[in-house]
Length: 364
Image 1 (tube, rainbow, N blue to C red):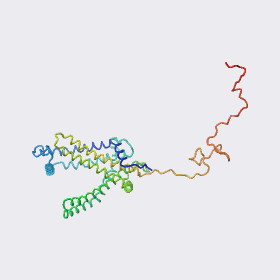
Image 2: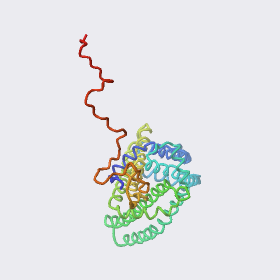
Image 3: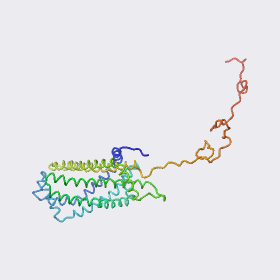
Image 4: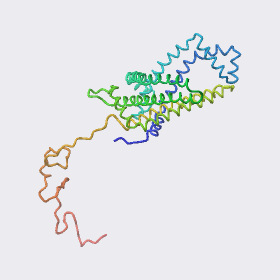
């Protein structure tokens, strides 16, 4: 029976142990962000470098000016949209390579080297691709009707309520959608964890088990049995990461008027790093839960009936005959280790060949 532990703390220690995986994920995400922000930077420069209205952003922060800038970006022809669409496949590609390797290191205690992450990413690439397609399909079937109902509910609220009452009434619908989406995300995270766990076992043909469908039922059983333990941890870490991003973004907006840009950049990156850390923490907590509820449990050795006499020297093979010199007579205890040599006979007097005694000779 696997040892039970707190998935929140155990997940935290797993995240720290595989901290290089988090660093590599942050580096790749930062690289993608820098690459695909070059076009956006050029568009901002074309608008703000030759505009007097840009002083309201460089010397302070004006929300109306910023909104007008984004409207001009959307109206003008640009390749920013193409870059945005290109960044999504590249992000998914990095996701398919890093996440399976991270889950593998969580479960096997292997060092999170970049070679290990990419090797496991190659092995699990198509499995995680199928899981992603299944996630999109199930989410569309469940969240699609909820979003449609939320739109109708918002229209109804706008007709019959105003101010705070309308705001909170609409907010309830969005909260319900968020909670349902979090449950779906938690379930498919467990599916990915169990998929990696199944890959550690060999089938009868000697090949790793790559069947994603075999991870669906264990993930559902674990989620149903430990829902009150896993879901609050997932929600708490989600809110923690989002709060870090909001707080650092708000502080960065107040620092826009400073002459130096790098403090704002570092503060914003710190918030994004905390968000990424909480996501890896979620994965580690889910891995801890899956390790405590594995798909395969070691079966005990079968107990075979013992027929006939058992040889104490070799009790695991009861069919082997007992040697004749080890058979004990009735009324005598059996000695499993017989005396290798007979006892020496007792003498009436010392042996003269061994003990030389001459009373006439005085000691020197």
